[in-house]
Image (cartoon, rainbow, N blue to C red; front, top):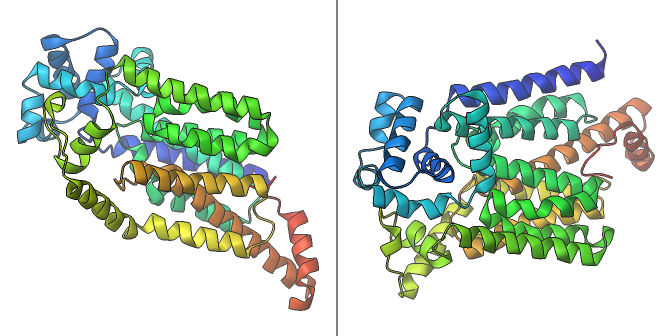
Length: 390
């Protein structure tokens, strides 16, 4: 079996592993319940029937112990006993039409429950992210190619692939936009308006990606793509009656979850908002992904030839997304920032691969550091990562 076939077999095994392990060890996070309800809402259910069908689907998806956990604490017990409370939560969840549409489609085609379909969508998206990652690394030295899957797996890919949330699907779409931006920038502009339909906060990525591809596409087309993405953001929020940024901010970061968010009082105390930002900053500083990003950027700056201008702009867009998202909503959720985690991980792997190829080339020629420039040129001819280098 040739090296190319060996790499293909290894990549396929890793993708299957992500998919099967995610389904074997699902998170069964509480968000599964309102996403089931949101999918049923798309199908026309409301009122007491919505609550009844949601609980029936949940009961058929999780074991008895987990069902009790998901329905009996002070907040959850109100939501799962009062149809009005459940319906008041729906605007937070119905604004993910791509995820909910995929969930309904998978459930309809396979016959599984909506709860099980949420897991299949996330697991499938996680496997797709692994496939794209290994495709981009297909010419990397073997040690890098072998090490990439476990590194990606434990740097939050396994986290998002196990969740009943739109995070894996949204990350997969954002990564597809990024790869398209390197290979076919016009296609990236076509995909860009889909981002807020996967996660509304991904509208922040739209102008950043447009900026990244700005030198390679007609400026009018880039501006139009951003305008359509922003219009999609406002349209989906209006269609499902989302409560607005301040309500979400207070619900998540100040008052805490309440079973009746439509009645939530917005804080007018500046100290509440300062505390939210300080707590978010503390969590970010303690987050390993922040330090990974710093290492990846240092490697990129000290490893010539890995990033061309387009790839560097995309990496800046990913980092900028984290900064702007934090300014708007200072919750340091690993799953929200996965796109930046993936981008910095890939940069680190590409840089290490280039360094390893250069070192091997120098060793093979028997020449020392004085001929490193010639050896690096030889290494570049032998090792040409397909992305982000163009």
